[in-house]
Length: 341
Image: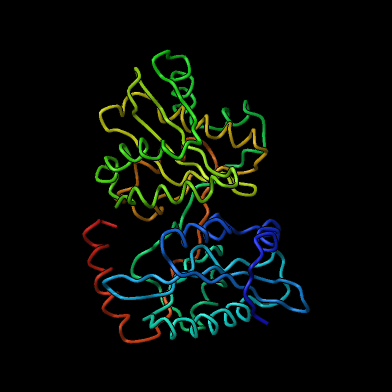
């Protein structure tokens, strides 16, 4: 049985017992989507009054078409007995009804399921197809921080460890933390300058402001600023949710690339996550192994230097509701080619 979930406590307590999850399915991400003016649905599948899986969906209305979006979901109970195919089919039928009412051309799912042949088969057999682009990371880099600092440093790449220590000994480098909403504007200044250099389309100031505020209400967000000789050169927005910290938004100025501010900033963020008793630090998206010329290759090497391992999820999936889907498909294929992905 599927029904709407209106209790934040029920939603978050269920997710606390799930292994495969990110903050993109948290209650506060739903609040962020609403703050951005998006219509959302939170619902779950129950069996004998026991919650088996949850799904957060939103409607996206763009010039290229309207579609339903499920980001890093649906999330299933760990060691679930019911077949994944059965649960996904129930969600799909429910989403199709919503999609028709919202005049959506398709349903897009960014799965949080490990990329295995069996998991890919579940989507394929239900009629999904690989999306022309990805909306959320399909490959991420995760660091287990449930160990002493000395061990974390030892497991890093030698160069990364050296640059962290070098930056820590440099009196001209300072790292600061902020939970002040007004400081999002400061972060935005260098963030917008980073987009072109790092080959990504930056989110708007309004997007950053609403994201920060949505998680700040529960003490789940911090801004980190790195300065060199009092000049702001790097920044990051870190989301702390359940057992993990997420390096979701980052920025740095090209002219200070040789000054190791970003290395010390990440180390301070990791230490903050440890101080909060968290188990994992997610560096978020990285380039896939089979794309040596990927625009994120340099950023990927930076993230991997801190130690950890990759997580690969089933590729973004589209379920076609109407022929309007193909206009969106063509537009996104062109955009992907232009961006070099």
